[in-house]
Image (cartoon, rainbow, N blue to C red; front, side, top):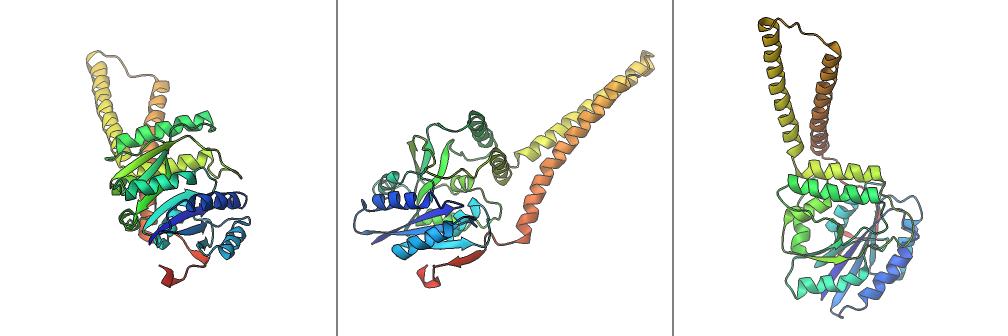
Length: 315
């Protein structure tokens, strides 16, 4: 008997959950009888009735388990908690809004069982329905980060990934506090197959990802997997040191040899402002890395569980 754990992170998804569960159940019923399922809901500090809906589903279906956080810790923490508590031979991550089509599950399962892949990822071939500016910056982000890292992150990749136990254990072994799952999945490697599909609109509720949150998430990914920004700030500093040295030589030559006195305080003020801006920019980059180090060394828990129906013997 093979067991598949479906991890579903939820934050204010009371409207979408019944629809998601119904669609997921239909697709689980198409699997062979020797495949068992575990549905693990992670309630990430929802402020609506998400937890009550999950408990209702758990009372109706003994395959449903849940973990409820003490507050909102973020999707990355929910993913990590799900992976830590998943007991299946195979594990998949899904969103409750049905933007990750359950109809792909069987194809993903067969790719691992019959084709020998360790993991199957999904990526959207388009971003239909998204604001144009968000789509533009998303594409730019992948181009930038792929030039900065030693491994490639797939443009349009979703967190909807189907993995065998080796991949799951590898990701769990990465205990870092500042987590960026798309980067972690790429970092651990393994033999991955990618399945493409058309973008699907959210079935109910509203997206929790504003442009500002996505920007912060992108910066998190860059600082988590690349030190290139530090190198760039160092190069800029070196260039300005060389320029200042050349300017000093130019001023000395004009004053002592040509007798041309140095003048022009407006240009001097502009230079001071520009150099100060470069310094603050570089300090900001260094500060980002220092803040990540600060959070890591405190070793605070990635999440705190308020309640759960999982017993220690279940894992």
